[in-house]
Image 1 (cartoon, helix red, strand yellow):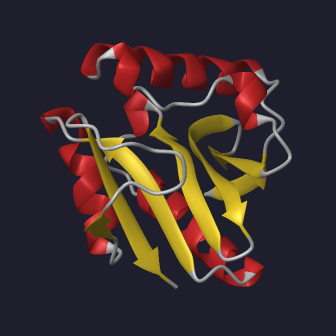
Image 2 (spheres, rainbow, N blue to C red):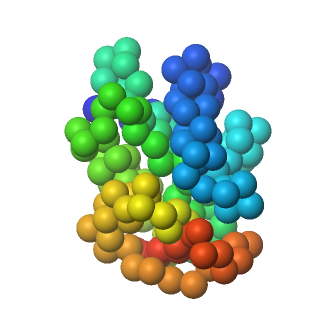
Image 3 (tube, rainbow, N blue to C red):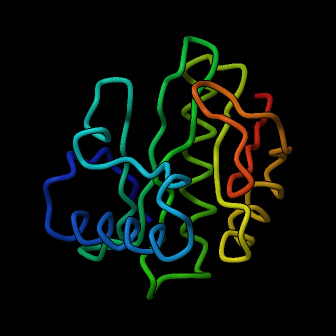
Length: 151
């Protein structure tokens, strides 16, 4: 798997992000969707990566700098036909390593509380992420769970 910084202009990544937003809309009420749009993902405080195998897009993920010690994982997504092949695990390993390189002391994330998000919560838990209170600008929401990991 080849992970590279992505400028979010290729047709494959555009389709994957659209799929991500559609899936969020199917599984979360509108007020509880925290997925970033293309303009938000291109902000300077966000680094966005795509995961490839040859010319095939497998998935993506992003890291948002909240401050010099704290990063937030955003836009983790595996292409549907590549689920359960280790794509999300590899992307998460990459993001955690990048957080360490940047000198962050903590990585945090928000994900859904519904059953559809259980695989994501299990993955994060297997990497040592623990449930926490809302961070940054998030508010308590029954449709969201918050997780954090000390690096």
